[in-house]
Length: 166
Image (tube, rainbow, N blue to C red; front, side):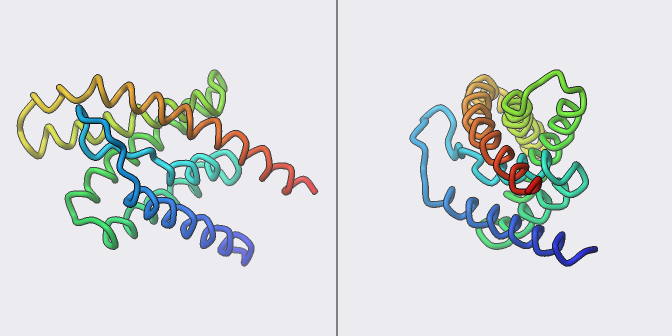
């Protein structure tokens, strides 16, 4: 692996880690869905997906989830994050490759699918389908946060590509 690529990974993992930490400090008061997050670290994964590629963004996402899980959470938190992160990454990669959706559309898919992945794991762990009650709220919040992350991500990707072309 080239030195520049290793340095880029290091910077992106650090940035995603810092954004995850910032999210632990910010509480979104949305009573129907406790613990809702903006998904700021997904901004880094989205930018990596569009500028570095699928494999690289997957490595970045998994590293971030594991590091944040060990630092700020516990194994169950990591399990939910891995489930949401992997489903989100798979669908974002597929939707990006189809070229039917803009970066913002791909981000919305990522936000929604992340929540679906977490709900599926919760239903399995708790063995109670009634947890799906949260799903409509999570789909709405995933779409809203996915839109915001996508708009920011599009601006970042544009700047990264401008820097890469100079």
